[in-house]
Image (cartoon, rainbow over all chains, first blue to last red; front, side):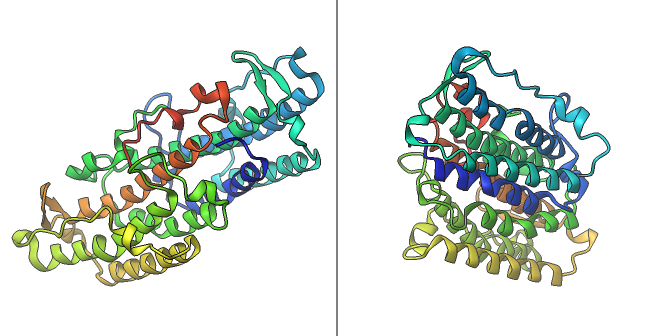
Length: 179
Length: 179
């Protein structure tokens, strides 16, 4: 399926409410535990999503529209949330994600992008030339990659508790390719 | 982490609202498409979860409490939703899942299970002896396996649209072990 802006926005709009319904006030053993050394908890993932709103998605949209391929995007800091989430509660992070996402989407809608804009190109520091439509599709798929990751992190906490059923539970076979 | 009933109930309680926030009124290209032949759409997964509430989870809890290992569980019909979801809208299925899950949890709470109950055994038709605590942990992990699956099914719809970013998106590397 090709990228379609209304479909992308429909998905991006829902993610804060999805994570809120899943994580707010959930016992900490689901939200603060990770999958082992150098892996993330659900709390860490929400911090990562906030950092993306601030430094990645709309900033890169602006870069494409203003500079095209002339200037490469800033590399994304995948561990920034360790610093930025410090001292905050999960409830605060969920509020912050909802607010920053809503601001991003307000800005995206205000651009009134037209069909001819979607082919405009920017320059990714590692991937090279990318289009605006690829960036927008990736923003949506990135939400899904982290929903996929959170469900796996949480299921990992019951890896032993499920006993012989573990072989029937696909999420427990997932190799952690989205950490 | 060992099975803990309040943690399991906290998770099971949230799943209908999570799926509602994610899927209700979402464009059909996210909810009705699947990953190819003999795979499920998000719509199919919600039907499967309803079937589980009706025929699997609490019926198996009752089997363990009433018959122990003397009588094996009914095998689970993984394709029942094709029949049972026919003619229904996704909104109707989401309402039905919320209602059946709420009934299941009402019944579970009313059992007032005590610590000594969790080791009680039943008989799975393929896995053999299983305990009540393993069944309850599996119920929670089964919700997560299907949230994991839905995020993967949806991301698959943008597999081409993300262009060169696909290699960074873990969900697109997932081999479909939870279909």
